[in-house]
Image 1 (cartoon, helix red, strand yellow):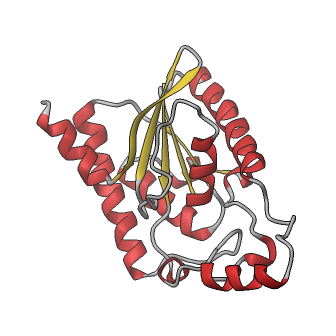
Image 2: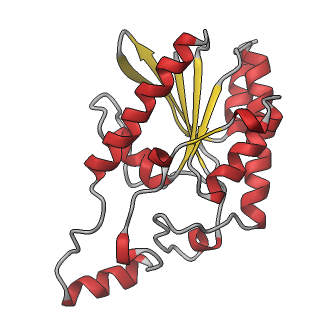
Length: 208
């Protein structure tokens, strides 16, 4: 079984390098186009690779949900079959939400680091608990692919919890980028990390 983590398309706060957290910031025009291109090439990749219909679960925040809607449409999955789950919400940054990294650093010079920020460990735990639930749903329905449309902080936290994931953590995750994990005897193996759907499609086509 394969698990696909997909980050949402770009928002204005992404451009401004602000921590978004659980604020419902919509995609901007560029983000909508990124989501559309992701959906287009993911559909082409899906068909070229001969993959079966996935289960799609999304964060309820509009930037993720709207990305998931485009992906579902491209894969001929009714929007009514999309699953929204609060477990896929972005990491909660509390009062830091809306701050740039520079503003956060300045704020922390005069105050202790806020304990209200959700820890990476807690974020990873809720993500992997959701994965367990929906992988079981896949098994019961005979499906082999699970797509989670979520957020950068969630994906990074989830991957950090996997010892096998050898990743350069300094590299920012692409908006509408895809990371693929494969369940091998109960352990996840990193197959692709931070790739565009277009890159994945062309990679498949090179081997056909």
